[in-house]
Length: 154
Image (cartoon, rainbow, N blue to C red):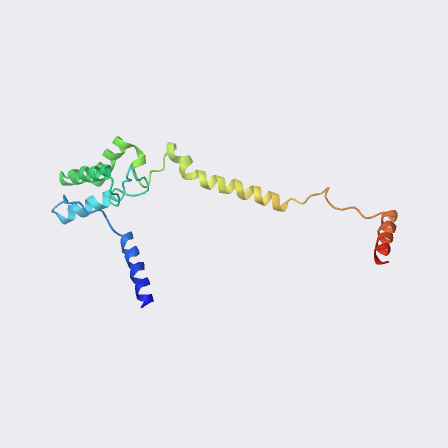
């Protein structure tokens, strides 16, 4: 019985991951609505920032969904709608921003830092300290150590 309740709770959480925002003003044509949903999944909610406008409950996300549906209904293509949104809000609205000169550091920065860190670790591990090797004991030092050991046993 306990296993049943655990699986029920787990299922509820898993199903919630695939939930999409339901609007009352969806397009009547299923093909157009599917196209609108596909476009909306590519657009970031400017309020929530890590959700698409489909997943967000913010008022701005609702307004953006309305705009996308109007543009799909008027016959605009996905490319035209995304161009309109990026002209209006910048590349930030895209969940996957394009690779260009302005975003090169954003895309390549983690790789560059990883390479620099790898090189530093490699050099640190390979480098053997030359001056830190202990020198052999002199005859006087050996005699002193033996004397200390004898005194410790007595």
